[in-house]
Each structure stands twice: as C-alpha cells, then as structure tokens.
Image (cartoon, rainbow, N blue to C red; front, side):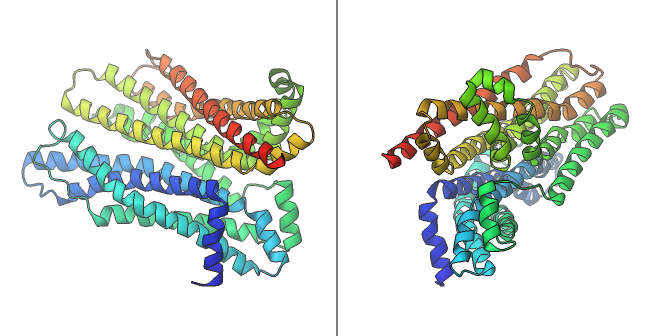
Length: 455
C-alpha cells in the first residue's frame, strides 16, 4: 500500500458523513440499474420460439432496457453529482496539503483513490442486492405479465456491468472535481474554498440545454407525429421520458437557479423567517448555491419524474380504458419506474441534506460564537430548506409539463388533462414534507454537535 493510498483510506474515517453519502448513492444506484439489467439478461436468454415466449421476451426487454434506461439517466446524474460535490468540498483541505509540500498530482490521486475506494465497496454490495431485487421484480411479473415458467437468468454479466458503469461514473466525476480543486496555486485554492464561489462549466450548461431541448423535442414529436399513429402507445414511447430528461437538465442548472431566486426573495425571507434568520438564509442560498444545488437537484428530478409519469398513467387509463392486459402491463411498468426512481431520488434528498449540513459544522459553530442562538440557526436552515423545496417544486412541475401537455394533446384531452389534477398537489405536499423533515433532522443533529464542541 503506497503512502497516498494509506492516507486516502485513513482520511475516510474522518469524513464519515461525506463518505456515507457517496457510498449510499453508489449502492442504491447500482441496485436500481442492476435490477433492470437482470431483466434484460433474462429476456435475452428466452428462446422466443412460441408466440408466448416472444411476448415474454418483449415485455422483459421493454422493462429491462427501455424502462431501465430512464432510471439509469437519473442514477448516473445523481452519482456523478454526489461524488463531484463531495470531492469539491475538499478544496480547502487540498490547498493546505499543497502548502506543506504535496504536489497537484498527489492531491488529485488522493481524491480519486478515496472516491474509488468508497465507490467500489458500494458497487460490490449493490451488485449483490441488485440480483435479489431483479429476482423480486421478475417474480412480481410472473403469472400476470409473463409466463410462470420464465426462469430468472440474471447473473454476473448484468449486475457486473451495472457496478462497472456506476464505478466508472464515480471515477470520472472524482477526476474532474480533483482537477478543479488543484487548478492554480495553493494559495488561490484556499481563497476560492473560503469564498465558495464558482461558475458552472460550459460543458455542464451545454449538456443541460441538450437534455432540456431533447425532452422538449420529444414532446413536439409526440404532438405532430405520434398523435396520428395507429399504435395507441406510440405517443407514450416519445413523451414518457420527456419529464425525466427535462428534469435532469434543469437539475444540472440548479446553482444558477438558486442564485437567481435568492436575491429577489431576500425581503420576503426576512418577513417569513425573522430578520436575522431570513437574511442568513438568503445570503447562504446565494453564497452556497453550488453546495445547496446538491439538494435541489434530486428535488427537481423527483418532482418532475413523479408528476409527469403519474399524470401520463392517469391520462392513459382514461383514454384507453378496457384495452386489456397490455394496458395493465404498460401501467405497471410506469408505476414500477415511478416507485423505484422516486425512492432513489428521495434517498438522495435525505442523503444530500445529511452530508451538506454536517459539512457546515464549523460555519454553524462560528455563528453560535457570534451570538446566534440554536433556534435562530435552525430557523435559518429551515428557511433555506423552504427555498430549496419551493424552487424544486416550481422547476420540477415545469419539467413535468414536457410529458403531460404533449401526451394529453395526443390523446385528445387538450393542453390541460380532463381529470385527476390533484396528483401534482399531493406530490408537492409529499416533497415539501420530505425536504423539511430531512432538513430539520440534519440541522438538529449538526447544531447539537457544533455547540458541544464549543462548550
């Protein structure tokens, strides 16, 4: 074991919360991708000789590849975001290491090896769990959507590929963040880490705009092309993933969205959260936009994907009522996707709040020393969480329209669906409760530790 590798492993114990956040993102990401991959591997193992076998193969292929790819987009974005932000938070520490003689190459190697150690552990455990989850998914489908005789054929190939993909994504994200953290002189790195400012890279903005444009383009195809197709599910094929794509695109722009909102909302926040707490919340939302973006991003994706897909299922059940087992298959697939992706996004919200708040322990300790009471600090963090929830709901709902409006028009319901408009409201309430609860629990634990350290 080299000196840098040993240092990387030892430092993980002193950054337990951040390491756990990365570990959970990789673990659940591997489970989600690997579970659907096992269904695809099972589909390829079916001979497809009889009509029943061909139908089973098609069902499993759709669920494993088409549906699984939607979740893969979200998972890879979440993993890359979590790993990248965790590594970027080391900028100040890396600057200190460089001032005592560490070279930029050694510092980059330290960050990458830490991220890789956590990612490999999470991916290996996730691969084992993915095989079990894939078996449960197939067992759910047996007898109803596929024949009871279909055997589970998921193995090392599918779960191994999922683990390798997530690990590779983690390594690339860590390498990019490490390069940014070691760019320029060590003294400059220290000043930038204290300022906590930074512009989004052009390629991040380009990818975000590409995803948003592609999602909107699929909506246009749904309205002008697929609406006239003889296949009743053609419109669903093009519009189903639009809300997820647009949601991920907006999530990549989260730092800019927070900065735009924080300035005009400062006066309102002062009234709602109290003059001190409201001012702190508005200031921190602008100053810490890149870090709070790690919480805002999964909120946007969760809101956009859940509202868009559930409204799509609602419209489909009304406009194609009584079409038989195939409709049940499609609706079940959509509900499974919503459930698994929403669960993953919810875990990422809680994960991000826990890691982000724990990382602010020194800042909260300084606020307490300057005269802020624990209640004021908790209220400030609650107002920050309220900003994140509000922005996430507005932007996520906007992203969900990329699926709802085109599909509703294609099914002749018009721009506004005919019924079940309560679905977005229910999801909004659930998201707000999730965000505020996660923020409250994380803030209470972190503030208690910060105050005890001073005493």
